[in-house]
Amino acid sequence: VSNRDGGRARGHGYHPAPMSAHAADGRSPTQAPSNGAGSGATHTPAGGRTAALRRVERLARLALDPEREERLAADLERVLAAFESLTAVDVRGLEPLHQPSDGRGSERDTRREPPEPPLDRETLLARAPRARDGFFSVPKTIAE
Amino acid sequence: MNAPSPAPTHDAPTLDATGLVHAIASGATTAARAVERALTAAANDRFGAFAEVRADDARARARDLDRQRASGAPLGALHGVPVAVKANLCAVGFETNAGSRILAGHRPLYDATSVARLLAAGAVVIGTTHMDEFGMGSSGENSAFGVPHNPHSPRGVRLTAGGSSSGSAAAVASGAVALALGSDTGGSVRQPAAFCGVFGAKPTWGRVPRHGLVAFASSLDTVGVLARSARDLELALAVLSGPDGRDATALTEPFAPLPHDGLAGKRVGVLAAAALAGITPEVARAFETARDDLSARGATLVEVELPHAVHAVATYYVVATAEASSNLARFDGVRYGARVEGDGSLAGMMAATRSAGFGDEVLRRIAMGTHVLSSGFFEAWFDRAARVRRAIANDFARAFEHVDVVATPTAPTPAFALGSVIDPLVLYRGDALTLPASLAGLPAISAPCRVPSGALPVGVQFVAPFGADAAALAAARAFAPQIVTAVPAAEELR
Image (cartoon, rainbow over all chains, first blue to last red; front, side, top):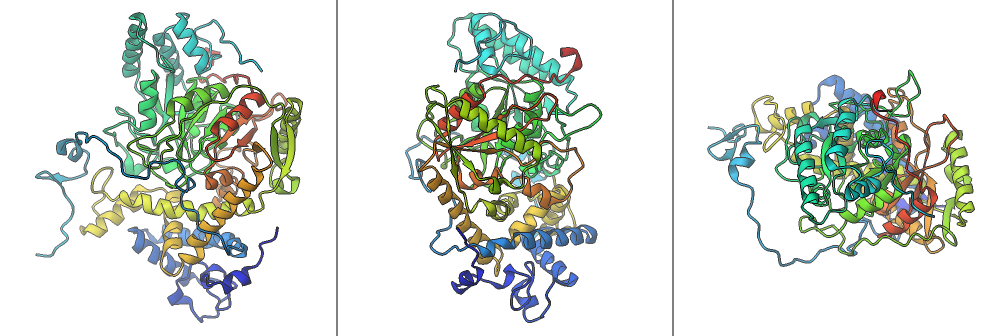
C-alpha cells in the first residue's frame, strides 16, 4: 500500500507551507507563516528558528536563557524536519482519532452520584507556594 | 500449560505475587516477613530504583494485615504483597514528583485510583520509584532525582533500565518487589520491562482508571504493571480494572481473564522482515527464537501488514507533545509545586517557574506540542497526525480480522549504556515498536524471550484488539509461563 502522495494531499486543503523545508515558498517547519513567506530560503535561517521558538515561549509561558533557547530551537527544527514524512500520507477519508475508545464502553453520560465532601480550603492552601487570607496569592496583575 | 507452583520458602526472591499471596494465606510466611524482606532489599538497592521508601508505615500496615488474617477476615487478592509505585501516581504519604523539579516536595492529598485499588486488595506500598520526568524518556536519564540502572548490566558497565518506568522495572527485576505500578504512554512500561527481563502490561486505554496519574498525554496515558510472571499481570489487572466515578474515560466492561488453554490453534500475527528492518541482530535472533517457541506451542504464525506503522514515531511525537503542552500548562507556580518569582509580574512568575522547573526533554516536548497546535500549523501537524493515527488503528483492525494477537519485538535494541544515546531523535525512534499499539489504544504485554546465557534480555510484545487485554495476557502466559529469576538488589540477599 503506497500513500506517498503529498501533492494530492495538499490539493485537499491541508496547509502545505509549514510542512516542508522544500515547500514552494521555502518556509521551514518552524517558521511562522507571517515571517517566512516569500523569503525564498531553502533552509531555516538562524533568526527564523529563534523567532519561531520565541513565539512558542510566549504561548507556553516560558522564558529561556539564550543558550537553552538556541539549543531548543535547533532541536525543534531538526525533529520537525525528521517528521515531515507525515506529509506523504494520504489522509483523505480519515477522521481524526482523538480518543482510542471512540466512546466505546466508557461512562460518557452524566450519572447519578452522591456528592462527597470536598477537600478543605486550609489543606489545599497548605500546598500552595504562597497563600493569603484563604486565597492563592499571585503577583499583582492590576496596576495601582 | 500448568502454572508454576509456589515454592514453600518465605524469603527467597523466587516467589511471584501469586505465590506470595498463597504463602501468606497458608501461613507459610507472613505479610510482616514479606514486607521486611522487601524493605531490606530496597534499603540495600544497588540499582537506584527507589525514590522514597517508607519503612515504618509499611511495617505497621503489614502487622495490621497479619492481624486481619489471624482474625479470620477475608483476604484480598494481594493480601500482604509489597509493591512499588512509579512516582507519577499519587500515593498518600509519598512524594509524587513525577521526576520533576517543578513537583519536588509535592505530597498528594489523595490516592490514585490504581493505588487505592492495590491497597484495598491488601497490597503494601513500600516505596516510589524513579522515572523520566513526567514519563518523557526511554532511558530513565531524564529524571531530576535519580537514574536507576539495569540489574542485568554486565560487571563494570551501567546499562539503562529503560524508561520511563525505569525504577519500577529495576525494582521488579531485582526481586525487591514482585509487583510495581508504572505508566505507559508510548511504551514506558513495555520497553523497561523488556530491557530488565521482566513482564510488563500496558492495558487497553481506559481499562485502568487514570485518576491520580500525573497527566502527560491524556489520549495515550495508561496505568500499567510490571511483574516477574504473566500470571501476576493478570492478577494485578483484575484488581486495577473497572469503572471509576473519577475518570469518565474508564471502560465500564469488566476485565475477565481467559481460560488458560495455551496457544494451540491460536493465530499470531507477525510482521514481514522488512517491517522490522531497524532491529539489532541480537533482537532479531531472540525474536526468531520466540517465533519458534510460539510455533512449538501450537500457534500458527500469520504474516500481517501494518502499513502505516512506519509513521507511528512522527504521529506520536506530534499528538503526545500537543497533549503534553496542554496538560503541563497547569504547572504555573500558583496552586502547588515550586515557584520562582521572576520579574515580579504574574506572567513573569509563571514563565520563570516553568523554565526553572522543567528539564530539557520536557521543554523540548512542550515547545514541539505548542508549535504543532499553534495557529498556522495546527492543520498541517496536529490534525494531520490525528488522521494518520486513525490509519494506524485501522491497520490493526484489519490485521485482527485474521489473527488473535500480533507479536513483535518490544524494542529494536537491548538495553544500552547510560549516557550512550543523547540524540532525542534516536531515542524517539527507539519507541517505534511500542507506539503503534499506544496510538490505537490497544492492550499490549511484553514478555521476556529466551536468550542465550549471558545475553541481555529481549522482550516480545503481544498486542490484542481493543478491550481484549485477556487475549494478550493469555498469549504471554502461554508463551512464557515461568517466573523470571530476580537479580537481587543487595549482594547479601543472593
